[in-house]
Image 1 (cartoon, rainbow, N blue to C red):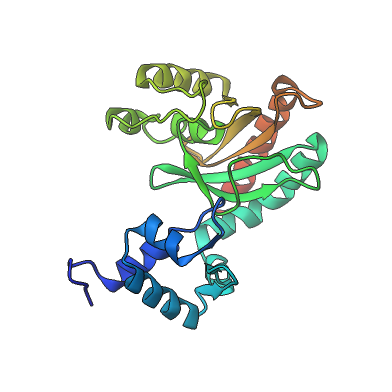
Image 2: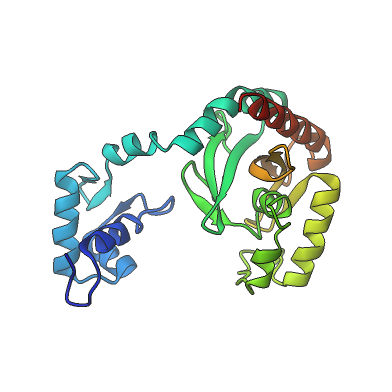
Length: 251
């Protein structure tokens, strides 16, 4: 079924669901209309239908994602298998560093966060489990690009929009290309306040037998934390290698 503009109803429903993010876990009808471009009547009708099947929950202010979405998310096999095989390793890394540990994959030109372990002293990162961030300004994204099948060349050749999230964000493709060469050489990628001011991160790729990254893991910390990136980096690389070996051995 399509609307008057030819857009399928399913497309409009996903547009409504995509309106929610880490900064907007609960949205009013007005906010849904603003974020989706849907009319008030269409947004209300879709929200009511999605609520009836558990995809949304009604709240005092408006709507939030329903528990049914969480249940369905747990059935995504690739990411869940990755999480299960990696969880013990990233828990060990968190115990060793005391800092936020993240596990992610590349998906649709973005970093998709599969797991985040932060303990009680959570670092205020712009990411969340199931959330997305750009490839170019995150340590995880750089690791995934550098160890992709073509070393990130297709991404760079596509004239990507390297949006500046902070004054430190790399916004020139030739600078990013040079950094990816360094990442491949050192098997480590860094984010030095490129995604958010006050936040730094070091990441390493989880690779297949051919050296292609299937995922990456990282440790994030504040710039004034008790440990430095240099102190944490060897552990990040060692754990990523251990996860890589483990995943290859079970295939």
